[in-house]
Length: 111
Image (tube, rainbow, N blue to C red):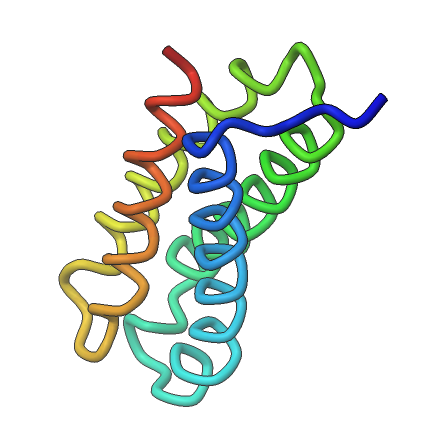
């Protein structure tokens, strides 16, 4: 039997996918190219952590895991940390927006 996803879950999955792609592409296509604070180890790590947890959250929701609420809660926390890391750096507005959108959606799923 095919499980129908709620519109809220589908929106969260979309936000997770967008955040995953945005963080990965910004890391490789912007941060590492610009260098300096953009390429600081702590900044790169949080961006890669964010991309990975977004992919993981998407996987948990896609397969209907009962644990998706737990993973989404962690995802929201990491997305907020990534947004904060990106906020003070030039050219990172798209990443901040994607992280905040994903965090908001994941917080709804975790509730």
